[in-house]
Length: 352
Image (cartoon, rainbow, N blue to C red):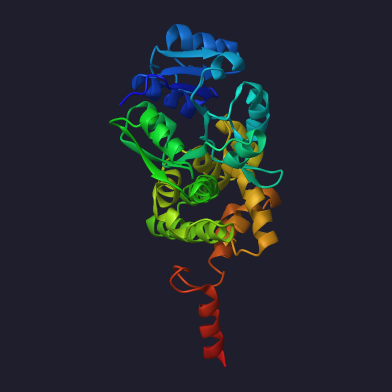
């Protein structure tokens, strides 16, 4: 049922933010979208197109774009923040004078801020002090959402109002919104899977087969959940859309930006060449470095993240990294069933 009082604001003019703005407008809500680029604003308002990111997608004509943050935010009930992680905090600070505690703030960005190893929803909390904060994450390739392909996502928040309002604003016959109260786990899943999409792209470029991809994805899931649980997340979250679901799509699709970066690296291109060829932000590149540093700091075993770090930032050839990974320890499969420590103890006893 449409809440006629709810106005939706979308901060950001990328592909996913644009698709979400149009979905909310399709659902009957007033939608205002903020972009820095005046030319894109004009295209959205006059042609109902975003020629830079979704040139073939017809945006609902009730989406009104503007470069004025105040106008976009002052009457908003729900604010979707779809800004790349490097600029996320800056934009939130710019928006802060026109935000109020009754508003619902939801991040759709899958990344980690270097300063303080903060997730985007933590930045929203820190910068505003508000209680209605959530994160939207899942297997959501923006181009397929724009094509109205059947898609599901997760709204994660400790706040029931945030969960229900987002479900009302965005849920439709092709975009289903499921709820979670593990905001940290859902958000970490969205950020961490970008690392392994790079690895999957590299493996495909090197000609590795389906067995390899299957092994890579399942070991990635183990590594993701191991790291997230050490940070306080619920391991069961990784069985859902924001965990294994997002991992599958980003490790399998050439539409994934991180996958395409990995594919270019597997072809022998440098990191700079791979990123330049992409022409868009690939959040996983920065995430590799941040997660590798954090894993060292807290003592979490992450061989895939370490290997990717060596390829991206130390010049190790992708094929050499793949060989090194196969020489790593053979430990437990699912650590929450049989711990790595127990397997090591068993191995020590057999050697005695």
